[in-house]
Length: 271
Image 1 (cartoon, rainbow, N blue to C red):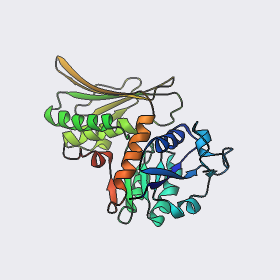
Image 2: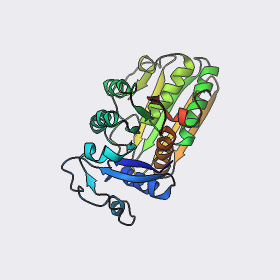
Image 3: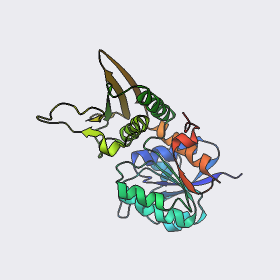
Image 4: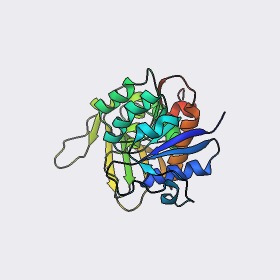
């Protein structure tokens, strides 16, 4: 099979540049397009040069429809509005859409899922092997421990991150809720402040820290009578997410239409 031709959305941003580098460092994929927001001062710049590589000949453009004509997939770590705009075009073109965007609303996710009867979408709040293994373990532990063990999720990210809790924290919360057989929307606590009253049994708590250049730290604690268990993951470089997204794209190339996760990519769905 020939190399997979990939578009990087948000190619001028930090994650976009990491994705461009990951494609350059890996076999089986080539950069076919670099998407940037309309009006960006980076439009027309070379994607390779922006990523600290030799010139690639791929210029940043805001026209996804044109650049997707000869592409096989798009790697999308942008913002919700941009991702939702990209969904329709990717589905119409029939290209793989790997979505790592966080901060998506319920209606945003409904739009994404609405195209998966005719398009291949791989979506995850985190593309790393370690985090997806952590989610699988969290689900099993939550299932094994009863509600006498409270669940608390703490995440730390760099000062520039705009959404909270992080997509990874929510993914871990979903894993814990799944293990408990409950819905996260009805069993979560966020942003405690003031006189909150006692903790509600069975709820899953979230806390978000922001500062510095932290790529992403997450911990899930199970706090029971006289003992506690904490599972954690530390991301040291955003390149691990870029390589995970690339792995997802290559795995999805040629798959039947559907909505997939990194658990599917990594064979963790049955853990």
